[in-house]
Each structure stands twice: as C-alpha cells, then as structure tokens.
Image (cartoon, rainbow, N blue to C red):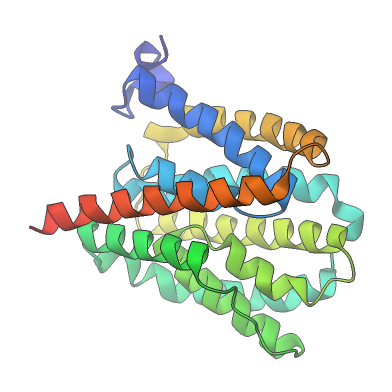
Length: 255
C-alpha cells in the first residue's frame, strides 16, 4: 500500500488520496497535451481538495514543471527563443515580488483566491494583450509569475500572451510549455528560499510527474480522436463545480 511506503508516509494522505492524485496527474496531463491548456487548472482544483494550501502551490508547481518540461523537450525545434528572453526577465521580477507577499496571506483567503481565479479562467474571456514587442512580453511574464505565486495555474493566461507571438500551433504549444517550465521552476526556487519543506512530498511529486509524462504521451495520441467541443463543455462545468466546492470550503473555514 502506498501510504505505508516511507516515501509517501510523511504526506499524511491516505491510500485513496495518493492514488487519486497520481491518476489525476495522468489525466490532466493528457488534457493539456490534447488541447494545449487546461490540465494545470484542473489538477490545481483536484489537489486543493486534499493538500493544505501552504503546500498546494509549490507542490503543484513541481508537478507542472515536470509535465511542461517533457512537452517542451518534444517540441523544442518550435520554441520561440526571442519570446522566452523577454518573458524570462519579467518572470524573474514577478516571482521575486510574489515570494515576499504570498507567505503573509492566511489559508482561507488563499483558497478564496484560488477558487475565484479558476472561475475567472473558466467563464471570463481570455485576456487579450496589446500587440507589442519585448516590453509587452516582459510585462506579461512579470504579471503572470506574480499571480502564479498565489493561484498556481496561470497556463491559460500565459497562453494568451504566447498565442499572438508564435506563427503556428506547434510554436504556441512549445513556447507555452517552455514559459511554464521556467515560471514553475522560479516558483519552486522562491518557495525553497521562504522555507517550504519539499522532502516530505518528494515521493508523491515524482510519482505524479511520471504519471503526467505518460499522460502527455496518451494525450498526443488521442488529439485527433476526441470530440473537442463536447469535451470542452463537460470540462468547463466540471471545473466550475470544483471551484465552487473550493470556495464553499474556504467560506466555511472563515465562518
């Protein structure tokens, strides 16, 4: 049983929760590989049901860094490196600022921010950034990285920035994966500096990264076999339900 193994025991999670997170990493990674974005938000909502908020953002960041790194590697010839240079400068600044703020926010407030952010991503129109050069990209990198320190899943926001800067779908997916790998990597470093204990969670996180990589392979294979319109409709309402449940739990905590 997983919960009895030393590499999983320190998480405090039971057998069902451990297997649920490993399977969720596989399924949500397949979603992202098949549709470009979405899996990170879904995984964040699922992880929030069983993992404390203080652990949630850095743990989610590690899993997402592994998932995006694999996708970036497979599509590396299509990465737009000029975009990445400007994005990286902004991301470093945004992460540095966010790391000084996030530790001061209470648990319930972070849950509310998470829930509202997921609802925003599901129902609000994607943000359309002005067509511009390095300054626009750098601002987008800074803003999304700062927000990512609080809410974790900024993939759709970063995708909106990348979309207008890459000439084809391969370029969008490859550059987006590279940007998210960088953003999550910076977040992990930042949380390390503020004292997050990764050791207790490393076994589960490695298992989730491995299953996520298998999900990436599966998602690539089913890309042309699934009805995207039906999937997006189901996915939208599923995420809404998870976000509302997260919001309800946070309100109950405050009351």
